[in-house]
Picture (cartoon, rainbow, N blue to C red):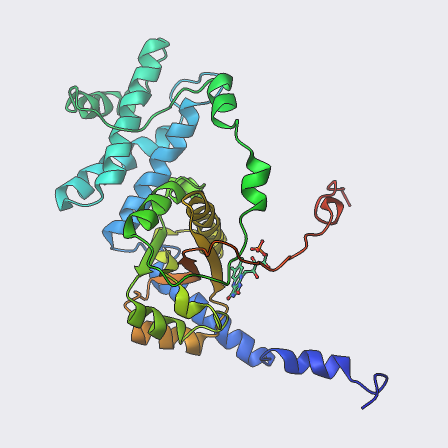
Length: 335
Ligand SMILES: Cc1cc2nc3c(=O)[nH]c(=O)nc-3n(C[C@H](O)[C@H](O)[C@H](O)COP(=O)(O)O)c2cc1C
């Protein structure tokens, strides 16, 4: 076949698996069903984790109020009763310490904010709120507002960030040596700091270190050929849908999960190990196969896998050239 006879459109069609519109809809339905079943968009999920998310989101809006430039009395009033009730219920159930402690710290800061500025707390919640705060006595709780100075930020960012970023590359050449669980733990701890909607902790990571388990996981994945067998760990990043409660959040899991995955990769780079994101760009049938073989709850969606491994002394990476900035950055114009 000559170059002129070559059918590029057909070649593109053949290149990756194609789906007709009905198949695309069936796959969207699969995602939608999970969101409908597990989120609190149309009925309130009975899971403690959903109440924890509700609480975190509610007290977070007060936390934000605490950091505003212009002080205002009684902000977030409508959130206060639900916050107190949610803390009580979760504490009764012995659940969600992270959220209840953050909420307690925030409510204490809320009262202190008003008292130090001699601002009135709305009378319909004041008595209950003060009782709630008084019962904490001097116990320490995180939450509220934290002070930083410009100098703090300048000192903390005095690093060669460009070099750090430019040396993070997707590695496809590993020694096969193990990766210490500590390395993963540290990176996850740092990645947790990445932004997340309303401060809710929706992100989850499952780590596989055992080579046999790694191989059976990677057998379900296409895109690790030639290097997967030398990875010291594979991470499965997921997001818990039970923590979303608005239709506008129907795609939020992939955003929060994606941001988290990127932070995790940077943290692993800082920890001296090589990484390669491993896509979970799979259809619903493959997703079901993964869930049949591995313990991933139905209420979680898989964002991506991440391969982690030890780097050889010297290695090559794909050049992966980047486009110029003006292809990405422009000024938004009104229509
Ligand atoms: C979500 C995601 C999934 C990816 N999946 C794969 C994969 O399955 N296999 C692979 O070799 N690279 C994978 N990559 C790596 C990209 O090819 C790579 O990030 C890109 O070429 C830029 O190169 P760099 O990471 O070296 O800067 C993935 C990247 C992302 C963000």
